[in-house]
Amino acid sequence: MPVLQATEEAIGQAAQALAKGEIVAFPTETVYGLGANALDGAAVAKVFAAKDRPRFNPLIVHVPDLAAAEGYAVFDATARKLAKAFWPGPLSLVLPKRADCPIADLVTAGLDTIALRAPNHPVAQALLAAANMPIAAPSANRSGRVSPTRAAHVAAELDELPAVILDGGPCAMGLESTVVSVAGPEPILLRLGAVPREAIEAVLGARLPRAKADAAIASPGQLARHYAPNTRLRLDAADVRAGEALLAFGPHAPQGAQQSINLSPTSDLAEAATALFAALRELDACGASAIAVMPIPNHGLGEAINDRLQRAAKAR
Ligand code: TXA
Ligand code: MG
Image (cartoon, rainbow, N blue to C red; front, side, top):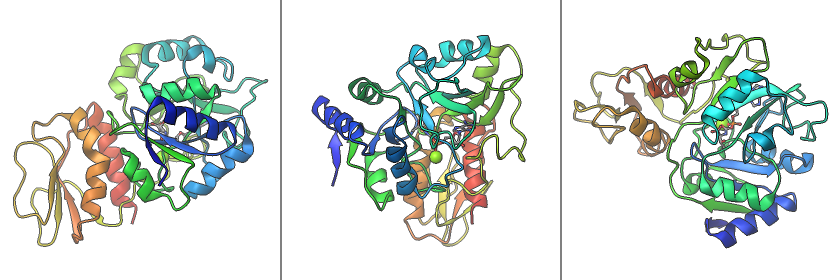
């Protein structure tokens, strides 16, 4: 099993594997990523293969900071403002690619834009420093499935294991990065995520509109079938029916579930976001007829949590 505690030595090993064109899994503050040298098309192809990911769905490139990012993309004043406000952190910016951008075409699925982010996690940053290359990394799950928030999820998820899985413990945020396009005339929210929409709007001083549902090309990852557990989800549940598991939220969880996990008994949305994907995995494995999900307020991180739950519910 290639799972290694993320010591300096293990991070060095992972960096060597990346340099040889192999793929490695590593923790970020959002979810675990499955990384490859973004300059090496053959290495990036292994990421698509391991995830069974459609080639039209581009990857996020991880960089240490804004200075590194400016080597690959064109930043206007708005893009720079967002990067300065949220990097390192869970915001991915979709930007026009520079004409001399050396990133492999497969990473960006042939688009003239590129998604970049500087992760706020000591292991991810140490890996970027040791490898000294941009790292293309989607979430380390099979395409369409629930993202991994622990190293053990990665090992359980993929048929073809990466050379190294760096174990940095559970991810602090638990939801993928928010993806904002700053490649067009106005910023557009492509994916809800770990930075709440309101926080971005506060920095922009303007409303951040969401991409239209039919803008699938602009954000190819926003397919309806995503985050899919095997068990059916029943959303907005006020009660528990026979044979159901319960994904609870808040202090008033109904009794009687086959198995029950409370995302946050105190109704704390950040705590709920952190726990969401691991809870879905655990309830999915308990053999219940369905997972009843209590309502979650639709503001702040709740908007991204509800987005994931709706996709998971639609997925079957
Ligand atoms: O938190 C995260 O973002 C994690 C960690 C590992 O950093 N990564 C992640 O990657 O969630 P992935 O591949 O699962 O999601 C990337 C999203 C997809 O929805 C993809 O379509 C979108 O970003 N994306 C990437 N490049 C794009 C581009 N040039 N234009 C529009 N959307 C893009
Ligand atoms: Mg993903």
